[in-house]
Length: 160
Image (cartoon, rainbow, N blue to C red):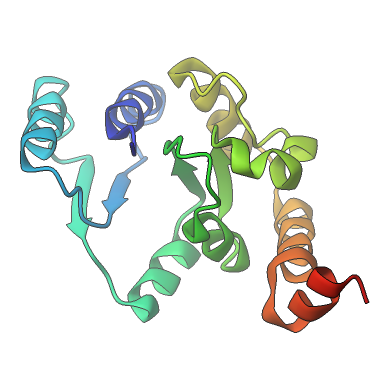
């Protein structure tokens, strides 16, 4: 469901282009056989020291991790709104995803990758890493506050 193998492929390409990059997979993988396959893939691609698997984290730890990251690559294609994308935005981290639940929120800003392909993820992440994204960070944060915060919940539900 999470398509971590795509994340690993993106990491390999980006690391080949810029060896100052590092990558972190946060949260439990859930399936031991799948996790073993992912670790073997990292090893075969020479990414053992470049990709970290950190498991579950507290909310405070997540905030710090989001704030210290440049990009939040969400390769999950569940078609349901993953709160981690919204949390990343609120912490100033630019999200990239192919998850259809985020078309409306991210498509205008080229951060929604319709094909959900490794090549397109790489293109978008490269663009983020080579651009001044401060205005984009603020715009996305404002969108999340307006469309997804508890303070606007009642008016959105009841069209007040």
